[in-house]
Image 1 (cartoon, rainbow, N blue to C red):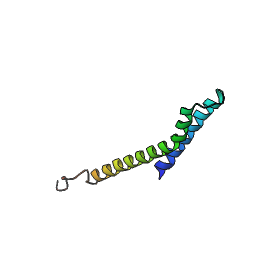
Image 2: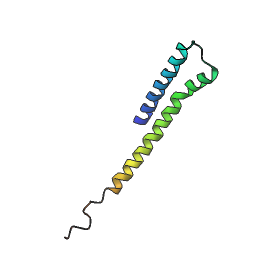
Image 3: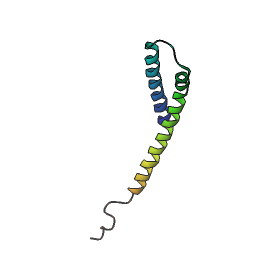
Image 4: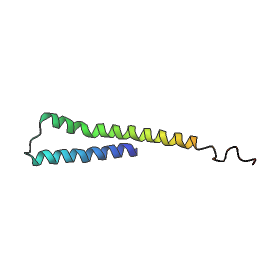
Length: 77
């Protein structure tokens, strides 16, 4: 859920930056930029979710690998 929110926020920020750049530059958007701005928030939201899932899997794998105590095998010494 955090990845979705972060992705939407990133898309919102990028969309605002692109919008401000084009509005101050003349006030008209080319069609390609309009399509890009329209697709930006959903694409960054999906990218945020994918990134969050990959980070979660990576951290879960590290936790499982670290479940063995570091002094494993030295208990009898």
